[in-house]
Length: 63
Image 1 (cartoon, rainbow, N blue to C red):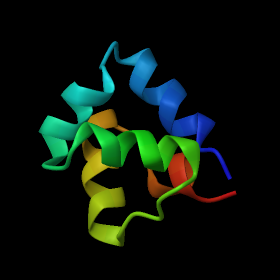
Image 2: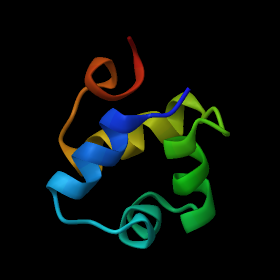
Image 3: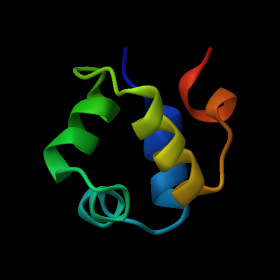
Image 4: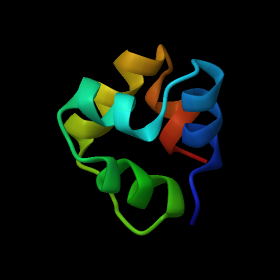
């Protein structure tokens, strides 16, 4: 399932996939795969993304 909330939060902070990836220590392709729903990130990666985007896990990763 696509993660449009992650994409929207990233865009809302005017961050590219590359910039978010660098901030959390993964590749741009990993961020792209998460947004497309092709990759299920670890809880540690989810937490790192949430910290950068100032969101909660519920806001970005749970339905």
